[in-house]
Amino acid sequence: MIRTPVCELLGITHPVFLGGMASASAAKLTAAVSEAGGLGAVGATPMSAQEVKSTCAAIREATEKPFALNYLIFRLQEEGLAAGLAERPGVMAFAWCRREVALKPYFDRAHDAGSKVMFMAGRVDEARRAADAGADVIVAQGSEGGGHVGWMASLALLPMVVDAVAPLPVLAAGGIADGRGLAAALCLGAQGVLMGTRFLATEESPLPQAFKDVIVRSDGHDTVLTEIPDIASGQVWPGAMARAWRNRFIERWAGREWDLRQNRAEAFAAVQEARGHGDPQEASILIGQDAGLIRAVVPAAEVVRRVVEEAEEILSERLPGLVHTPHAGERPAPAEGPGPGERPVTPE
Ligand SMILES: Cc1cc2nc3c(=O)[nH]c(=O)nc-3n(C[C@H](O)[C@H](O)[C@H](O)COP(=O)(O)O)c2cc1C
Image 1: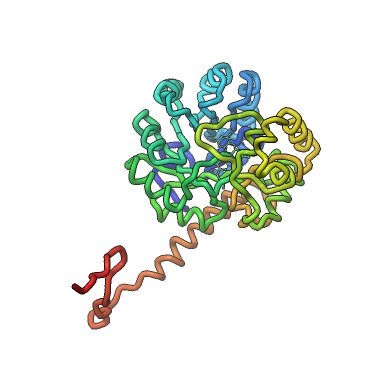
Image 2: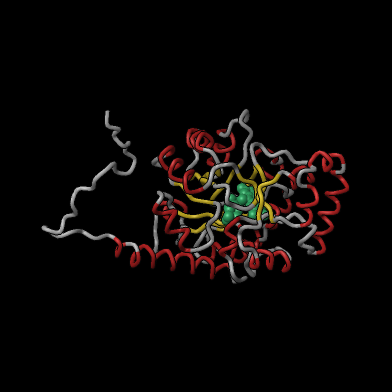
C-alpha cells in the first residue's frame, strides 16, 4: 500500500485522483473512484444548483467516501458555486483563474464550508499564487494531459512546483495512466496523481463507446495542442490550449482558424450534433498523450487498484535493486572529466 500525507489530509486510502471533467462528469464514475479508495471528482462548472444537488445526492447514495467538486474559476456561475459549497464536499477543486482575479475569496468560502481546497496550475507562478491564497493541495498539470493545459511538460513542471510551494502537498497531472506514472511522480516529489484520460476509458465513464474506443486505439502520437475547440465553442480560456484527438474536425480547421471564427456557430452546432451521435471524427475529443498507454476499457476501481499495485511493485522491488553500495576495496576510480552539471575546464 502506498500512503502519502495527502491521504491523511483528505481521508482517502490511495493517492489516486480523478480529474474533475465538466464535459465528462458522471456521479457513477466519481463514486466508483472514491469507493475504490481514491478521490472522485465532479466537473461542476456548468451545472445548475439543482444539478449540483442531485449529482451530490447520487454520489452519496453510492459511497460514503469523500469526493471533490471541481470549478473553473474563470467561467463559474455563482448559483452553481453556492450550491456546491452548500453540499460541503470533502474537497473544492479549483482551476483556471484569470490573473486579475483574486483566488483567496474562493478559497476562504470553501474553507468556511469545511472543505479542503485544491488548485490546479500549469505554471509555477500560478501554483505559488494559489499557495499564498491558502490552498491545501496543488495539482501541477503538464501539457501532455488531455483537455485544457499550459505549456510546461510534467517532468520539468512537477519538481519545480514541489519546490515552489513546499511543504504543501502536490499532485501530478498530465500524461499519467499507470503505476509507472505514479512511481515517477512520487520520485519527483509529488504525493499522488490526478488522471483524466485514463478514467475516460472506464466502464463508468459517460463518454460514448466510440470515444472510449478512440482512446484505446490511440498510440498517443495522434493528439494536438490546438485552439480550434475553443474557437468553435466561443470560450476563451485564460492561458490554455486544448489537447485534442486530431480528427477530421480538427484537420478541417487547422491553419484556417480565421475562417472558423467566421463560421463559428455553424461549426459548433455540427460538433455538438456529432457528440450526440457519438461520431468521433466530427466531435471535439479531448484526450492526453497518455492515451497511448491505455489498452482497454476497464472498471474505474480496477484502474485505481492496478495503478497502486504497479507503483508499489516498482518502488519496493525494482528500484531498490538498482542501488548498489560498493564494499571497501570496490570503490570506483574517480571519474575523469566533468561530472554532471559541471563545465569542462578549457586549457589556457
Ligand atoms: C475531456 C476533459 C475535460 C476536462 N475538464 C476539466 C474541468 O472541467 N476542470 C478541470 O479542472 N480539469 C479538466 N480537465 C483536465 C483534467 O482535470 C486533468 O488535469 C487532465 O485530464 C490530466 O491529464 P491526463 O488526461 O493525461 O490524465 C479535463 C480533461 C479532459 C480530458
